[in-house]
Image (cartoon, rainbow, N blue to C red):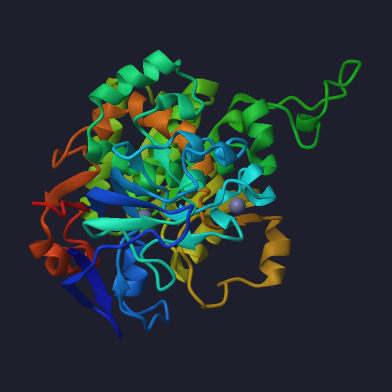
Amino acid sequence: MFQKAIRWHPPSYDIRVESVPVPQIQHPDDAIVKVTLAALCGSDLHIYRGHAGVEKVHTCGHEFIGEVVSLGSNYGVDSAKGRPTLYYHLKVGDRVVSPFTVNCGECSVCRLGYTGRCPEGLLFGSPSLEGGQAQYVRVPKAGGTLFNLSDPSTWSSSMSKDEKEQALIGLTDSSLLMLADILPTGVFAALQAINHPKVAPVITGRPWPLCFSPPLEGPGNEVRLNAEDKVLTVAIIGLGPVGVCAAISMLDALAIRQVPFRIVGIDPVEARREKMKAVYTTIVQAGEGTGEFVVLSIEEAREKVEDWTGGVGCTTVLEVVGNTSALSLAYDLVRAFGAVVSVGVHGALPLPFTGRQCYNKNVSFDFGRCPARAMFPLAFDLLVKRQDVFGGIGEPASLIDRVVDFTEAAESYRAFDKGEVGKVIFDPWK
Ligand SMILES: [Zn+2]
Ligand SMILES: [Zn+2]
């Protein structure tokens, strides 16, 4: 049995659609998923460009949604009880979405919610694991990895089981595919920033370090913050699909907490800035977004932050690009005692600032991959809430630009690499 798959060939910029064997169960914990849709992602470009040092031909893609067609012998048996719930409950025919990495769901790292760094973790669409831009994909440790969209009782949520079931009826596969990476990664970036201890004085309205303790006794023991001190200033560097998701999540979290804000979204590409503006307009029309939100080029943004903060800098900066110039800009824009959250995929280059620069700004840096499996419940709730943005295809405020077949694979990679298109989805059966 053979299938069509989008394959990368070394050294760079070489994408081919090839006929390869349909994957088979290799381990009793495996599932085979028939892919209904797979997405092209910014982090696919690191391998595409030859920057990742990869030499092995492999199937691309780490964002996919599909249907279970085969399960290993560890599913549905008594010994599966006590393991992650899908080992007992997952069935052939279930609709599933996968996070972009495999995670066992059973080790201490996974239990703590750091699923993106499970010691048994593997990245789909890398030399170590064939990707999802194919008609079929093998999912190792599938009981700990997959989300079963056919059984909403298998994950927690702010919604009841009935509400989840109702919501799922209205959600298209293209919308649910956002749960594989870009939406959980955007939520992760926003929540890391908002929950960062350096940001606590602004969020709580109490100065450092009293923001972490009960109120002190007696008058005059606490400095009072004025209204301006309690405005959260945020820069979001990079307005590709993940940056837009981070902005959406940030706006949602600030609306819930009723925190006043000034946010600047930054991207050198005009088409991305226009997309971000259209998304923000949609959100404002829905009644959220009571602060100031602007979308600017890099130089304009430097001036805006200077103007907003009198040269002090932003409370927090989200870096969603993954190169040294974006990190440099983040360092420049963040305030002393600020927090930079970096979810861009960085390569081997050294960081663009010295230890002395870090010391002199008391700056915190949070780097790294999103634990997508752990973020899923929060991302799902936001996906349902923001169908005005996530539900469409090819509209001004849609994150998905188009759905194409595999004959357009090489051209889609080329155009995406050049910034000529936004998010592209492949239908392997079209
Ligand atoms: Zn991705
Ligand atoms: Zn694990």
